[in-house]
Length: 132
Image (cartoon, rainbow, N blue to C red; front, side):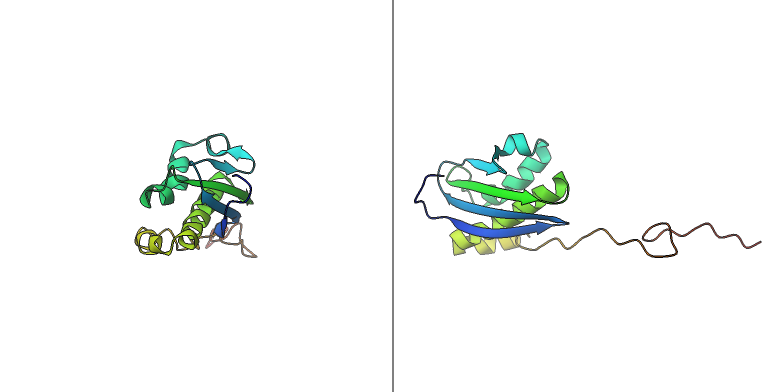
């Protein structure tokens, strides 16, 4: 991003990952943690998932994205970047909100790993029961 450009900020979350996303008008350059998107998120399905808010709003080659993400794994980080990007697009242009909302990109995915309970080997699993 060039200096002096107006930047729009939003935060995205997924599982234990948190992404901070800044967008500005540009040529479609996407930087995640100082690296290009293709270098950081190497799976094709996750790349298309990250880029889906830009594709839906038809602003793929019009907006530069700079994101920092930490925590979780690659899937959670990709989901956090997507959530933050969708929220930043709404800050950038309020008319994108109905489109992104109908595509269910503004809703935070609340699914988390369930904690292990005491007296059990896992969250739901129980030790083998023997009647006799």
